[in-house]
Length: 300
Length: 105
Image (cartoon, rainbow over the protein chains, first blue to last red):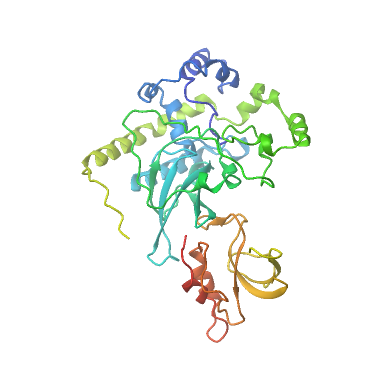
């Protein structure tokens, strides 16, 4: 997620102000702190005014990697065209880290030639055609993770069973959490949100298993972990204090290097806005056409 | 494994000596040496290949017949192809462990 401007969506006003002034290119992190509290209830409707601010969270893979070594405007443009072509073939829905997805791929190794996997999205990374996401589930008391390319031609369908966000950008701590936090039944029914509601944030805090852990979770300032303190020793607390980098959020240059400037973003979104909007409208039509039927009871 | 020391892979039968999915290994288990097949790994896998929370081995004998009668963990579907390739007409038949698998992912 290094490519997106790491911002919650509710700082539009501040962003607009900054854009008018034109003296800042990336949205700075100072603003985030001050404006965070007031604009919570802004719905999805209101955000449609500036597509860039809406789209960079829904389609983060359309923004290129901010590293100047890897920028190439022609390749990026061609990749975007290919992505739109793929999106006109299958419906790639809006989803976030923390959403529960069902992915069906055509699998030459499987018996029925298709393979369906359900799991919580714990990571989204990569940009352009190399965008990928990881699903995690616990099957028969065994944690399983599968990584998929978002634009893989073997993907037959991606279905969002539960659209929500979590408190953190990456949910790797689920590997060390109790298994019930990453267990999802394969026959889960999709939960449909009413039109126009903002994406809900699931504020569940997971409980970690006792140590040893795969990573030093205590140093990562995670919001979605409840019992991290009770597993720590005095030594770990001291080390955590020493390792803290509280000045980093004021580092404008660092922020700038890992984000795409607003001017570049408006160019990109202006290029793809029309087609994305058309895809969205056609999908809505399809959704309305589909007859509403009660889900069949599961047999056997 | 509930009793005794946890089993340990002490040799991987390939040129690199690094175990990948579907490789034949030698396992030290309960003070004995047994052959096994790696059916699930913790290491980073290719796209669409599942990565597990633990390293899983199915014990087999020299002919490729599994020693147990059931497999309780999910088995990656890619093993079907890998094990079919490794099976030779007169040598060991590794595909028998696929038939006792309970779940494929």
